[in-house]
Image (cartoon, rainbow, N blue to C red; front, top):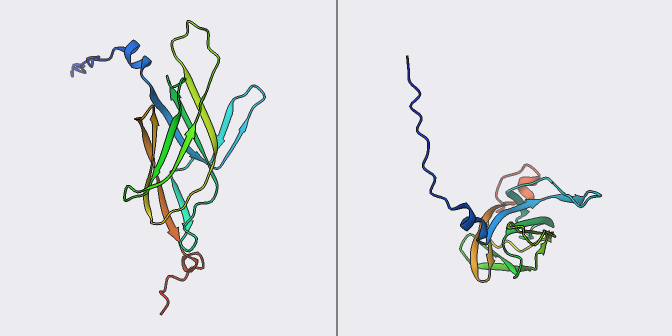
Length: 159
């Protein structure tokens, strides 16, 4: 007979302290969004990879959604960095805080909107979210080029 020897993990988290810190909750890329009658946001077509025309080297328009906590008195800045760490663009959001009772301890803010940007090289583009000059974290968006030869099924190089 085998005994259950699973150890209970030690908890080293002060929940009240962690909840009070500004933090990134989510950063998503999507194709389409709408709002329900009661204000709930629906995101469709969430992705982390985009195909860009190799000649145009610019993304199509797509949606960016950000949700943060404890950032209700400042600006969220999103920096878009290319795979070489070069700044491509910056976006500032004044996030709308939900209405909470004054004694509520958890404050969440979110924003959503359409973006497009130049993509000089293929690779992983980093979207870094900062609050009051301090990074909250981020996420990557893989950019792959699709040339007209690849679109037509002809991978032969031109001479």
